[in-house]
Amino acid sequence: MQVTETVSEGLKRELTITIGADTLNERVEGKLGEMKDQVRLKGFRPGKVPPAHLRRTFGRQVMTEVIQETVTNSSAEALQERELRPALQPEINLDGEIEQVIEGKADLVFKVAFEIVPAFEIADLSKIELERPTAEVSDEDIAEALERLASAQKNFEPKDGKAAEGDLVVIDFIGRIDGDAFDGGTAEDARLELGSGQFIPGFEDQLVGTKAGDKLDVTVSFPEEYGAEHLAGKEAVFETTVKGVEAPAEVVIDDAFAEKFGMENLDKLKEAVSGQIKGDYDQVSLAKMKREMLDRLDELHSFELPPTLVEQEFNQIWHQFEHELEHEGKTIADADQPEDELRAEYQTIAERRVRLGLVLSEIGSKNELKVEDAEVNRAIAQRAQQFPGQERQVYEFYTKNPQAIAEIRAPLFEDKVVAFVAEMAKVTDKVISKEELLSDPESEDGEKAAAEKKPAKKKAATKKAAAKKPAAKKKAAPKKAAKED
Picture 1 (cartoon, rainbow, N blue to C red):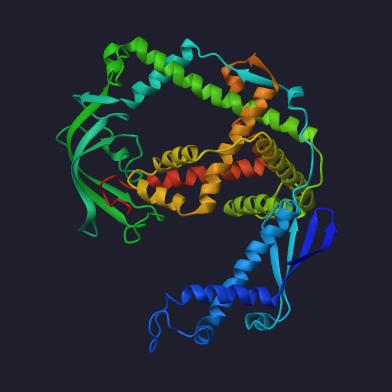
Picture 2: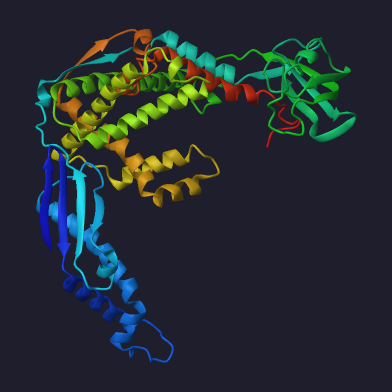
């Protein structure tokens, strides 16, 4: 193998690698020899196929395989010998007439173009000073959490008189369109909390003021955007019988209430709630400290960045921004700033992300920080739990998809590096109020907030709209009446 460095400009490198035709032919002969005892060809006994016949039959296929293997292996070998660390997958370009190479009549010549990871020194981490904001869990916090638990455990008890907003009615109904009953439009003993928005808009309003024994026709129209096309925009009449009215029962937060959650008594439940709140506060605290840590690391390091890495990061950020504008029905012209200013700011953000990514990677590498397979498996299991009934499919997706595994491994590695830097740095705890601790909704991602500060008004509006739209659609249908598939 002959290797010549043809480009060395900044972080850009290009190697020209030549593999002699004789070497390729030797490797082909070796593979054909391995095949001799395995192939079955008509007219020949096993193991007795002449080499020349094997070459005529499988030579081209085997040579193609040899070329692919040779390009992969020799590229890696050349990089390793020169201790070059590509920032991205190298680009391979074959030179010369490939047909001549496949026929074994010409040397294999190809170029390997790539950008290297820049060499830089990690700053003295012990000199980094960080503030870790913390908040105490108050009795008021615990009381509010218990009230939320009580609200989620809402019970109803029979009520005499008319149904009011917040009451629950037990109903039978038959839905008809143009006089004909439709599939999914009939139910018995349906329990509907008035004001919950479970049924088609207008359905619940017409049951306010009814009482047990009442029979009425509830007339509503399915929304135009309703999921079932044959019902969308149609007017329906539900023949409804009110069989009972129930009012919310007062939930007493006592030892009996605690036992419903598997706790010995109320004090034990309060301890558990306090611990959960503290854990939530600690997560926010860590995220805020991480943001400050990333700021310090960014300030302490300055080096040339691989242009292609920065370009890819910028394109990803810009694409996301355009997608959010498009979702809101807007264009770049509707943004708060001129396009050139936005591009310049996002370019700075992209450079920051790449620089921090390289710094964190270098810290992890030099300090031999690794993510164990067991940690990855636990993370996959947690992800699978988010899809009840599909756990096996989720697990198989990750185990068969290296890129997906990398996406799981990356944040685990970053967390390890952040924890390591925190151990090395001078960290001072600062007690602040709960409101101050929770004031920043972007605190879970250190530089995500910075990335979204510039067109903040536009992007915030986009996210709010996107969050509300699915919820509005879910309110369109009764749970049992014409449910959307």
